[in-house]
Structures are given as C-alpha cells and as structure tokens.
Image 1 (tube, rainbow, N blue to C red):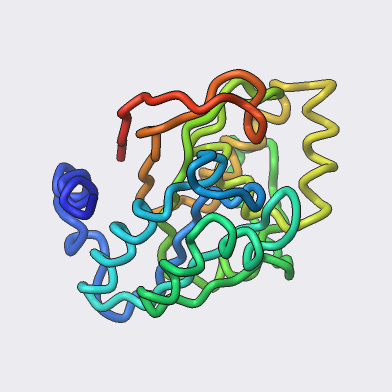
Image 2 (image 1 turned 90 degrees about the vertical axis):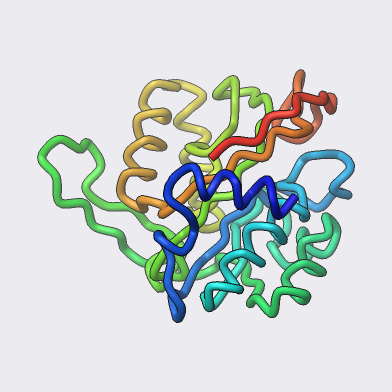
Length: 212
C-alpha cells in the first residue's frame, strides 16, 4: 500500500516537495463510528499507515484526529484498527472536542466564520484521508464531506438538520469549509466503498479506486 500512496504523492511532485521535517501534520481519516475496518465504514488503517509512514520518514510530527458521528475518535480508532496504526507511527491520536474560530476573509464566500476543532488550526498542514461511500443526505461522501469531521460534536447535527431542508445550502457550506481549511493533500480510499444506505449501514462494494 505504501508504494501505491507514494505513487500518488509522486504524481503531484512527491511528498517531500509538499512537506518538510518538523511540519506538524494532522491526518484526518473518516472515523464515523466504531466498527471493524472490514465493514468499510471508516478509512482503512492501511491507508492511514501508508500515508503516515511516508510523512514520518520526512520528519513530520503526526496527529490523527476526527470528530465521529457517534462516540469519540479514540474508541472508534480502537475498533477500526487506526489506534494500532497511530501507536506504530508514534502519532498522537485525538478526538476533536474543543472548537476554535476560523475566520474567512473573502467577499465571494457566504460563510465568514466556522467553528472547527482547535487541532485543525494548530496543524501546519492537513492530510485528508477520506472514504468513498454512499450518503443518505448528500448522495456521496468523499473528500469534501470528510472535512465536515473538523466540526466538533453537537454542532454537526445542527448542520445536518439544515441539510434536510436545504441540501444546496449544506453543500455550499461544505465546499466553503474545505476552501477555508485548505488541506495540503487528499487521498480517497475507494478500494472498497459502500453503496445503498450509507454512510454507515450500506453494503460493501469492491471498487478498486485510490485517488489523490
């Protein structure tokens, strides 16, 4: 898997051209809820390990974090295998719990501020490790939707409630949130995806897709 992830980085100039020794890098997988990785609800731990090991070799300081829909990131990571990966990489594993204000200075944006996890703002660079799944409200959840996990805890259901009445408004928010956070790189885990009643109760489907 590391060779495949390295090839994706290389297609964009190589990881060493984007990251340097000492960079504080936050890996943001999809940690929706605690299920075994074979259910493909969460980003596969091999993807997280491959990306993390490449960055570790460069000399980056790694943190792995998310704000799950149910539970906290520590318990979810233990169930899906990512906690073991964090330990092997020597990465800090965090559950997003404290919000900080992210201001947006652009006349072209509807949303002028976001409340995101403080770890998002503390990182020098963010690597978005998304999962390819169906999604009951937004049809698909991939890299853009994955960064919604930057929003802490109970603030997320408020946005999802809004999405039920105005999906376009919610989608615009997701796009502007991504523009504001600006991940340094994104990898999409679609080797096995999900179809049907996603993002948690759909059927596993082999897709053989790995994108950057």
